Image (cartoon, rainbow over all chains, first blue to last red; front, side, top):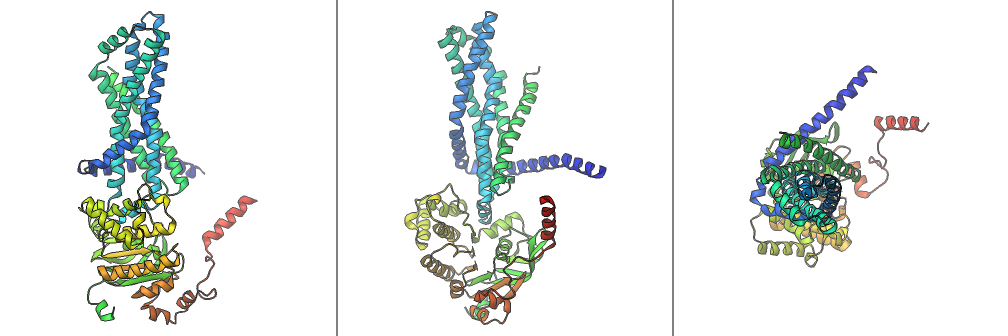
Length: 260
Length: 278
C-alpha cells in the first residue's frame, strides 16, 4: 500500500520532469534545423501571413475594448486626484508594458496556437507527416520550424498592433467621449513613455511570450496521439499550458525589468 | 523477366532472416525477400498479416527486431538519419490512406516532392506534374482541392505523387483499393509500364489477386506470422500450401481462420470487464 503510494507519487514527480526534458530537446532540435528560415524565407513569410491573418481581427478588436476600459477606469481614478491629464500616460504604459504583450499572448495562444497544434496533430493522424518523412524530407524542418518562427515573429507585431489600437481606444473614450484635453493626453504620453525602458521592455516580453506559446503549440501538436481525441486533448493543453506559462513568465520578466 | 536476368544485378531491397513487430509483439518472423530492378513484386496476404509492417520496415519507419533490411546496399536499421534520408529520396511510396496534404490542391500535392527535392523551375514542374496527372487520368483535375475529389481519385493523385520523381523503388500499399474496375485496370497497367519504362523495382501490397497476378513478376504471400509461399504467379497458383490455396480460392474453411485467435490478454480483459458490470 505505502510502496504503491510512493511509486505513484514518484511517477507524478518524474513524469513532468521527463516531459520538460523531451520538450527542451525538441526546442534544441528546432533551433538546430532553423537554417531553413534563411534558406527558404518564403516558408516563414507564408506562416507570418497565415498566423497574422488568423489573429489580426481578434487582436485589434480586443485592443480597442481594452483601451476603452482603461480610458474609463483611468479617468474615474485619476479624476479623484485631479490629474486626468495623466490619463494618456496611464493608458500607454499599461498597454505597452503589460496588457499589450500579455493579453496578445493569451489571445494568440487561443487563436493561432490551437490552430497550429490541431494542424500538426491532424497531419500526424492523416499520415502526412509520415509521407513527408518517407520522401526523405525532415518534417520537423519543413513543417514545425516555419510555423514556430512564423509565430515568434508575428507575436511582437500583433502586440504592437494591440497596444496601438488600445491607445486609440483610450483616446476615443478619454478625449472624444469624456472631453479630457487632447493636447495633455498626447504630450504627457510622449514625455513619459520611454523607448528603451517601456517600448523595448514590452517588445522583449512579447518575443519571450511568442517563443513560449509557439513552443507549446508545436510541441503539443507533434506529441499528440494521432486520433481525434488525442488532437482535441493536445489543443486544450496548448491553451492551458501556454496561458499559465505566459502569466508566470510575465511575473518573472516584470520583476527583472522593472524591479529596480 | 527470366530467372537469369532477375539475378544479373544485386537486389535493391533484401530482407535477410528478418523478424518484425511492435514492442514485444512479433508480426512476421524469419522473413527472406529480395526485390530486383525492373520487376514487380506482389506482396499478398490476409488483413493484419503484416504486409504494411513489411513496407514500413523497407522505408525505415520501423526497425527489424532481428535480421537485416538492406535497401540500395544500406542496412536501414544502421544508417545515419542523413543516409536514411538519401535512401528515401530514391523511393516513392503510396500510402494506404493516400496521405495527401489537405490544404494543397491536386497539383500542389503532386508538385510537393519536386518543389522540395529538385531544383526544377516552376515551368518544368508544371510540365512534369501535368504529365504524371495525365498518366493517372487526372490532368484536368489539377486545379481541384483535395476535399473536392473522390476517394478513388485521391488514390490516383497519391499514385501520381509517388511516381513524380521517377524513383528507383516504388512501394504501393493497396493501390487498387477503392478504385472502380476501369481505374483499377488502368492503374495496374500503369504500374507495369512505369516499372518497365523506368527500370525501377516495384513492390505492390494488395488483396487484388487477379490484377496483381497479371502484372507481377514475383509473388510473396505472408500469413500466420511468416512467409508462406513465393515464386512467379503461376508457381504460387500451383502451390500445394494449404494456406495459399485457401487464400487464393477465398475459401472460408482451411488453416486461415476468420476469427481473431484467442489470447490471455482478451481473457483478462473480459474477466475485468465482467467484474465491472457486476
